[in-house]
Amino acid sequence: MSDADLEEIRKGRLAQLQQQQQSNAGSAPGAAGQDEERKQQEAEARASILAQILEPEAADRLGRIRLVKVSRATEVENRLIMLARSGQLRAKVTEEQLKELLGAVAEHGERDSAAGGKIVVSRRKGGWDDDDDLLDL
View 1: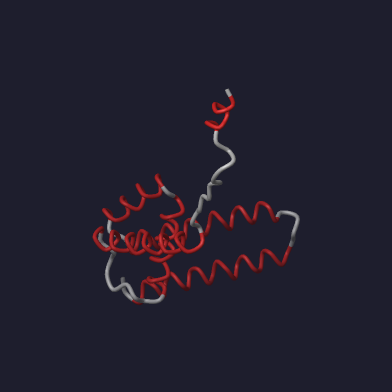
View 2: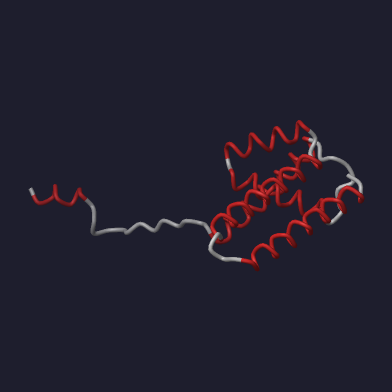
């Protein structure tokens, strides 16, 4: 992916944002429709960026991941788009590179869940044993 392609994407996105600001300044009654339209435009922009930076095999793998776990696929997409916008991607992302990125995301997610989402079960000892009832006979 060349710098010219990224610059073209940035200019297109800037034009979209300016157009949205002008239309938002006009009226508020159709805000629900505009919000939905804005979300659809953002989804289309994400899809076009991903189509430019992913090889077909990698895009297929990401699509299969989206079927299983939407949050993980979204996180990977966000990272890829961030890398593309910062100019750190020099070529299209291969399936192997996507696997490495998925591993990094999985490790990051495990680290976060281990730190704050750990469930600890503490059981009461003594006093609640059903076998005690048999001693009374």
